[in-house]
Image 1: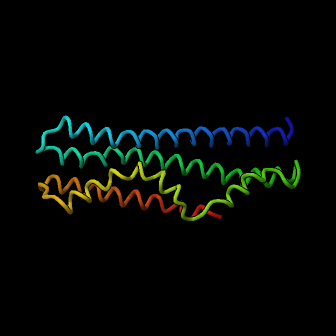
Image 2: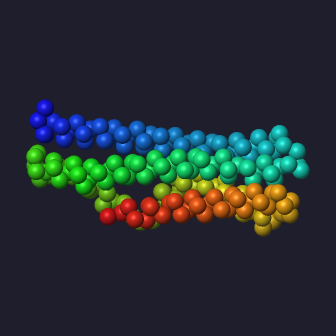
Image 3: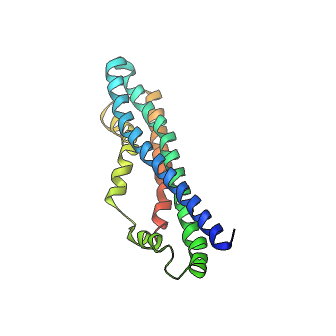
Length: 171
């Protein structure tokens, strides 16, 4: 195998990695979009009134793992794309021609620091975290429920801090 073939094989493998992670991304968002309403409906049907708030306050704990998985996939996907841009593309331009792999550069230039579509995608992942905030302001909770609500709120802050990487990814 020559250097050109090795480079193209590496590029193809990395693109497959990005596509696989993108598919996982979409499944996570779909799963979250279906899961939180199911949790709330199940709580209304199955849980008695005294325990309903505790049940609602546990939903964000489940979603924390889902959101962290989403964030981890996002970071790996963007690191892979950055590797293609910074390592493979310059080599390809030397070996193949000057316009090799222009799509990645073009597409990266389309990203903005703030995009409504990104927030919309994350909405299904983050909406359960607004349950404890709502309950803290509008209803009286037991001490145990308040502890869970504050834990949920703390996890929301951690999640928001973890999303700060998105602010620095735009070139």
